[in-house]
Image (cartoon, rainbow, N blue to C red; front, side):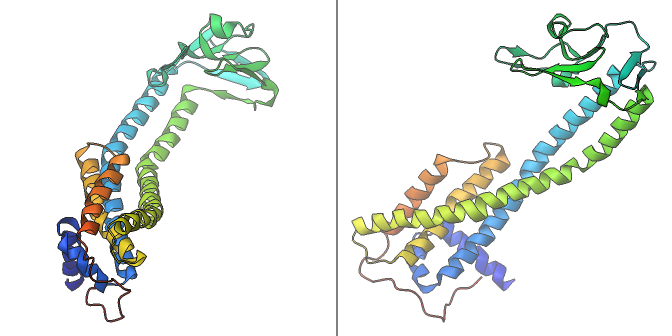
Length: 293
C-alpha cells in the first residue's frame, strides 16, 4: 500500500506539478527508469485490453460469417472424386462454386471474380476470364490468377486419391471453428507484444534522445544541469502524453498520437526545463534517496 501511495504521488506530480521536477535532483536515474517501466506496463495493459475488447468481436464475427458462407456454398449432394491424378464430379460441367461475399473486394483495376472455383475438364486459361473465376480445375491442372493478373498452373498428378463431400467440408469447418475459438487469446498476446515493444523499447530509446533535446534547450537558457537531470525530466514529463495517448485509445479517438505525442511532450518538458533553477547545479544524487517506488 505504501508503494502504491508513493507511485500515485509521483504520477500525480509528474502529471500536473511543475515545481515537483526540481525535486528530481534528489533521486537516482534508476528511480525514474523504474517509474517509467511501471507507467509503461500500466499503459500496455490498459491499451491492450481496450484494443482487444473492440477488435476481437469483429474478427470473431467475420470468421463466423465466413465459415457459415463456406458451409452454405457447398451443396449437400455435391461429390468430387480424385484418383491417379484424375477427377470427376457428379454435376454438369462447367460447375461453379461462387465466391463468398466476405471475400469480395475491389482494389484499383482489380475486382474479385464472381466464382471461387470452376470445375471443367475442357477448361482453358482463357476460361478464368470467361467464367469469371479465381480458380479453374481442368483435366490436368489447377489454374489460378492473382490481383496482378499473374496466372499459375499446378499439375493434378500430385493430388491424393479421395473424395470431397459435404461431410468432409463440415468436418474441416468444425476443425477451423476450434482454431477460431483460440483466436482471441492469440490476438491479445500479439497486441501485448506489440504494445510492449512500443513502450519498453521504442519509447525508452525515444526518452534518451528526447533528453538530449532538453539539454540543448537548457544550454540555450544557460542552465547548469547535467544529462542525468534532463533524462529524469524527459522520463517523468512523458507522463502527460502517455496518459493522453491511453485515454485516446480507450475513448476511441485514436490508437496513438504520432507527432502529437512529441508536440505535447516537448511543450510540457520545455516549460519544466525553463522553470528549473539556474542558480543551483544539479549533480548526481547520493545513495540516501528519500523517494522510492
